[in-house]
Amino acid sequence: MAKGDPGVTTTRGRRAAPRAKRTAATAGGDPELVQLLTPAGERIESAFGPDGTEYRADFTDEEYRGLYRDLVLVRKLDAEATALQRQGELGLWASLLGQEAAQVGSGRALRRQDMAFPTYREHGVLYCRGIDPIMPLGLFRGVDQGGWDPNEFKFNMYTIVIGAQTLHATGYAMGVHMDGKTGGDDGEAVIAYFGDGATSQGDVNEAFVWASVFNAPLVFFCQNNQYAISEPLERQTRVPLYQRARGFGFPGVRVDGNDVLASYAVTRHALDNARHGQGPSLIEAYTYRMGAHTTSDDPTRYRIASEVEAWQAKDPIARMKTFLEKQKIADAAFFAEVDEQARAESVHLRERVLAMPDPEPVTMFDHVYPHGSPELDEQRAQFSRYLESFEGSAH
Image (cartoon, rainbow, N blue to C red; front, side, top):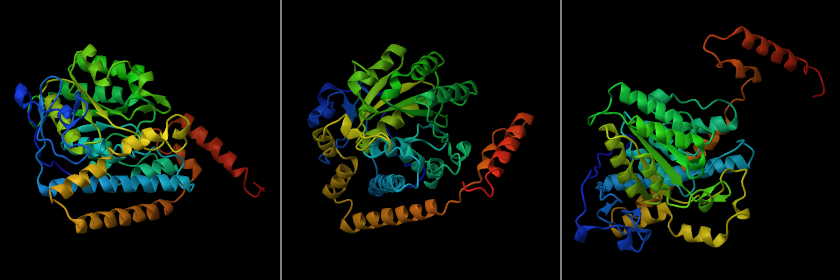
C-alpha cells in the first residue's frame, strides 16, 4: 500500500437505526467489538460502536491488496528480527506476531501531519510511517540509539519505560492544541500506543487526566494482547479496558484488533475527531500476542497451548487472504509475488544487520549534550584511560 493517505473515509457521528445496526454480534462475535472482517473472511458493510457511531472502510481493490502486502511484509521482517536475536545478532527483540492488523490498520489511518508515540513493539506502525525497518534493529543490536528523525517521519523514538510515552504524547498534543493546529480537516492529531499492562501504570492514568482536562487532540491506542508479560488481563482490570475512558470524561471503543479494516476505520474516526477539536479518545484493540513478550520471555510458563490455538484461528493475515480469495480480488500469482517480496526483503534486512559496524565504545559520549560539558569531557577521558589499560594485556 502506498505510504500516504489511502483516501478511505469513515462516517463520523451517525446514530444507528435499530433495524440497520450491525455489530460483531451479528457475525457470532462479541457485541462490544467493532468488526468489519470476520475470522472467516466475511466482509461486514458497517459496524457500530457503543455510542452509536457507524464505522465503515471502503477501499479499492488495489488498496485491499496493499493492506495484505503490508501485513505479510511486516510479519516476515519481524520474524527475521526474532531469528537474528536467537542467533546472537540482536540483544533483544519484542515481536509483534499476531498484532499486525492493529498496527497496520492504525498506522495507515494516520494522516501525514499526525504524530505517533510508540512503545518498543510498534514495528508495523514504523513501517507504515515510511521508516527504514533497519532502524530499530540498530537499536536492539546496540550499535546506535535508533537513528530516525521523529520530526521528519512524525514518529517518536521507541520508549522502553512502560507507559511513559503517553505523557510525552499528551504534552505534545497539548502543544498542538495551544498552537491552534486543530479545528479543521487539515488539523493535527496525536496517537499514543501502549499495552494492556500499561493501563495499570500511573503515567497512563495521569495522561488520561491531563488529556481530558485540556481537551488534547490525542488518541490513546491500547493493544490489548491479553498479557502484561506473564500477567493475564483479569489481573489488570475487572471491566473491559475501553470502558475506563468514561471515568476520565472521554469516549472509548473496543475494536477487533485482528481486523485490519476495522482497526483502520475506528482509528481514522478517532483521529479525525481529535483534529477537529473534539478531544481525546481511547481505542482498545482486542488482539493476542502469539509469541513471547520479548525474546527473554517463555510464554509456555503462564499460558496453555489450546489458548494459542484458539487465537490462531483468528489470524489477521489468514482472514485477509480468505477475503481477497472469496471476493476474487487477488489470485495465486499475487500471493506468491507477495511471499517472494517478503522473503527477499527479509534476506536483505539480515544482510544489512550483519554488515553493521560495531561502534567504538567511547562514542557513547558523543550525543549526550549538543555542545558537550566539562563533566562529560572528564568522564570520556576516564573511560578512554580505562580502555587503554587493556592494550597489550591478555584480556
